[in-house]
Every structure is written in C-alpha cells, then in structure tokens.
Length: 215
Image (cartoon, rainbow, N blue to C red; front, side):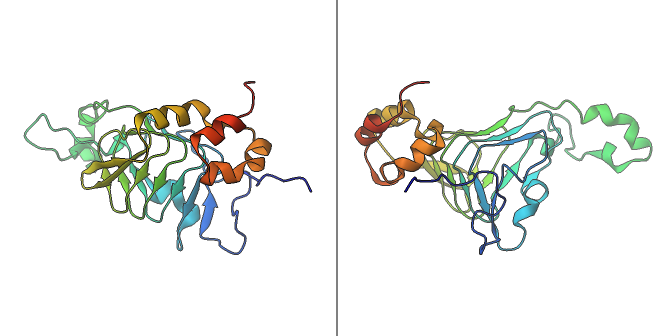
C-alpha cells in the first residue's frame, strides 16, 4: 500500500483535537510567513494566533517561521512595534494618546529595530516562551518553557531562562553540519513520508544515505 503524506493545508490535523492548528492555512497577515506543518497548541484560543501571540506587529518587519516547528501554548512573538524611545528623559509614547500630542507622532515612528524575526525549521517551543524582536533561531533548536529569548539561538541549540541562555547543543559541530547539509525538512513530502522513521529516530548517516538526489 502506498504511503500517503499528511495534508499541510488542513487547519486541524487531529480532528478530535481542535486545540491543535496548522499555522500556514490559518494566518492571513502579509507580515507573517509560516512553513508547512508548523503547528500551535492551545486549548482555549488556537485560531487567534495572529492577534494573541504575535504582538505589536505594525511592520515593516516580518515574522518568518520555517517548516515542522512545534509551538506550545502561550508562545508569543513581540515585534518591533513594541519599542519605545529611550534617548530622552521619558519612554512614554505621548503621541498615541491623541489630542495635540498627536502632532508629535514623528517622535515615535522610525525607531531603530533589529529586522525580521526568523525561526528556522524543526524548532520546538515550550509552553509560554517569549521571543523578542529581531531574534534569529536556528534549525533544530529547542526553547524551554517560560524562556524569554533576547539573543540569536544557534542551530540545534537548547536554550532556557530569562533571559534565555544556551544550555547545551543537541549535537556536536560535525553532526550539526551534516544535518544542515542533508536538510530533511526540504525533502519532497512523499520521500519524507517513506523515510519518516529514519528522520525521527535514525542517524545522520541514515539521512545521508536516504536523502533524495538534488533537484
């Protein structure tokens, strides 16, 4: 019997678990890009991810999330719109209060930012993690529950705490390089389906042996 890949276009991959949603078919904002099979798990508001979990997102910076990422309940991304001026005596954003204060809106626009927030492929976020603006998180990384990520996370790094610190690397440098080269997350879905057990429990050598020929 042929192995049929899962469907990346359905909203609820587990029909009996409505708390789990695939984000790619859910998001509508042009400022958010999400790869196939990345999911969010929330027992109360799973389909409100764009408004409840991506905050202060006024652009132009984007949130880019790769394929096969797992986001636990309450994972939040704070975007550059949360920035306040810190070069004067007060950080309060007076112009947004309206009235004649609104004449000074130029004082809170164009604040320096760190660019897009980028999450690579196969990243696991624990419950309640927070990602600050402009952070880049590498392939295969793990972000522990409750972490506040303020700095970039290396490929296959495990981080935790507030602010999040590197706890360890999941693999040594040579193994990480081999995994990045094989890039299983870019395999065609039918090929990935055929070799799913190796992706989940095999070795880098297994993946190198099973990798499809370059297209």
